[in-house]
Amino acid sequence: MKTDHKPFWKSLRNGLLTVVVIVVFAYGFQITRVNLTELRSEQRQESLARVLRTLARPDLFAYEKEEVVATAPVFVTCPGESALEALPPPDTSGPYMVITPPCAEPDESVQVEGFGFFRNGEGPLRFVPGSDPANPVTLGNAVAAADAQGHFQATLVLPDRPSEEVQYIRATIRRNVGTLPKLTETAYSTWDKIIETVFLALLATVMGTLLAIPLGFLAARNLMVSVRSPLASIALSLLGWPLGMALGFVAARWISGLGEPLTANLPANLAAVVIAPLGAWQAMRWALPQEELNPPPLGIRLARVLAILLAALAVLFALFQLAALAMNLGARLEEILYALGFLGSFLFQLGEILRLATPVLAALAAGGALSSQLSRVGQRISEQASAGWVKMFNVIVAAAAGASTMGLIGLGIDLLYEIGQPSFTLWIPMAVGAIAGLVLALLVAPKDTLPSGMAIYSITRTILNLTRSVEALVMAIVFVIAVGIGPFAGVLALGLHTIVSLGKLYSEQVESIMPGPLEAVEATGANRLQTIIYAVVPQIVPPFISYTMYRWDINVRMSTIIGFVGGGGIGFLLQQNINLLNYRAAAAQMLAIAVVVAAMDYISSYMRQKVV
Image 1 (cartoon, rainbow, N blue to C red):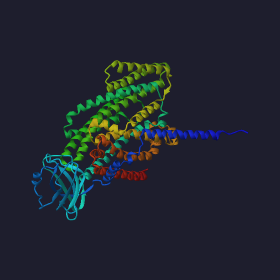
Image 2: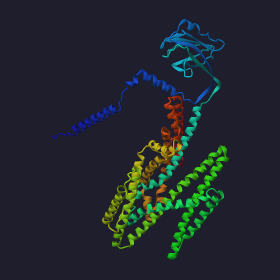
Image 3: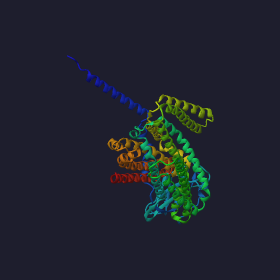
Image 4: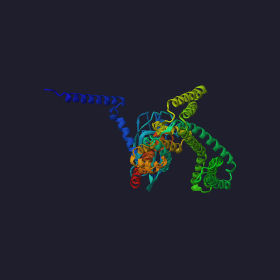
């Protein structure tokens, strides 16, 4: 009879697995120093109870108070009888105190009795040194609580402040004024900071969403896996990007200097903003006709290219003038709108952003345009030229593309690490890149295509993963150094973190779409842009909206933390109060955070239900 040993080995495996789990958790307890002995400490329990009671009373409302102050003399170390007899009697015409005995040694107790104070009033008892009356000493939790007749009794332990001079015990008794409490200064400052937090998160979410959408498509594998290009097209595209960006940036700077004399003239600004786009529109209409039966002569084609370039320069000129117009109008509106001056400031900042962003946009547009045109040239050469010519052309442009790419990477490394040796940061990387491009051109068949889409996908994914691994708190520290302490640094930090986080979520949603509509649209001969618009976008709009709303919720919560490093928002105020042990004020900020987060959750849930 055959014996089945499987139950035995299964039981042994389960037992060993249980032992391993126990050992792992036991080691985890040791590493994290789990120890409840401190929790049972009376001192810690007392401190915890005191803090929890304070947190349960947030500093939001308070009565206006009036107070009365009375002092009584006391000696720490008893002097001679003559000194005690020289003490003046208490003034009984107002609130007064009697200390029994009138002298004692340090750390000994005395009885303090007060008369004529506010009925049911309360306040602290403090020791006032005779040599330094401006700095009274708090005596632990010593409190004077008057009864209905304005009388109180308290036992005090004198501090270790011996002196031959007379010293004092001071009682400050307060009572509420009015029938209803009022908002405290803490409440007003909390309100200001929580509003700042909400708008900080809003701006970061909007900015991050706009930039995350294109990254989401580039990081979607199902859209990029089918993108293939010949080596000549890829190499010329790589050469076109830096060259085009440099030309675009130089052209933008030249146009900016050309229009500088008009920036201080409001009518000239307005005229330039109107006339330049109209001229660019007319030039583009002539340069890009809708239909032609026969190809135009070479001269006409060159003239059209020149018209397109002039139209692009006119658009740049209009953008710079529009930025100057917004800044001029904003500065004037800020002066005349008084309470609504923030609208003028907003317009001014928009103009400043446009002025700074226009050279960057020009560089990107020129780089993309030149790269696209050179890529088409490479595609046409690979399709129409003979295999031998294509092979030779691939060797030249691949070596040039590899050299330029590695040279730019080397320059970036030199900029970061300040190596200062061009042979290591420029010439050697260019030589390595040229050799790599040459080897690739020799190994690839002349007419073969390479997975350029997957290369873009891998680079985009790598950038998203590396950037997302850096916490927004660290990003906030960097931006605080760049733009200073305040909410703007928080907007930039949360915006960058939103870009990489939403980029990953968007790309995964694009990857999970149904392939049927995609294949159906591609079967009609649609290009890639048309395929995305008609097959991809209708499937991703609802989840994109849901992700964006959820990200706003996350940014509200994260903005309360980045304030700890100077990123603005209510976190900055919360950190200050915690460091000052002002737990009642901190409780007010924590309550505001909880209310806003809960409200954001309900609002986003409602909007998702209605929109999605």
